[in-house]
Image (cartoon, rainbow, N blue to C red; front, side, top):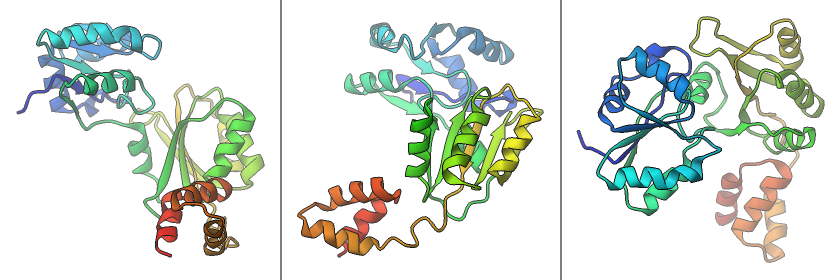
Length: 270
């Protein structure tokens, strides 16, 4: 098996049995593991009898750790990056060091493994493969309103904390009406629950069932969102004004929540 300088290793999002054999092998073979919280990672390492030492690497010290990690790799040692749960760089730290390592010519690979987005979506029947993942939703009401309206013509997938989920759903309900949503919590754990229902029913359910774990959620797209929009006319109008295909795709995407790649293809095909 080819060796790399730096390994991005997903860890279980709940059930420890979901770790891969290759992930265990890599974590045992590297010289150092960068992790968000050593207390969390150590439980995983102890469970699989992995003796590799850890160094903290989280969103508050990413830049500070760069020189230390570069020194370790420059000395010929191998490193792995893990997050507390799931896949690094997917709503978890890692972007800063990966960018730095690529700029410095180090070899990097990512292992397949647990990710809340795919675990959740694989249980949700959708009308198409197209969806937009926006990560954790912003905190202000106006920001949430803006983002759910922007993606109303696509299935929008998001993460949310348990202490904010009900208020967030109420905001979505106010601006999108009685839309269908899907929510997943405690994924892969004993009390896993996935709900697909009208948003008002989901809110009522959650008010009577408190949860401690983070949520993965999806707002189903509004099938009628673009029925009354004549995109070709609007493209022609903007072309006559001298806008490029790229500009047109961005403008119409922002105005009507339509996928900009779809608009671009229509534009260049005219």
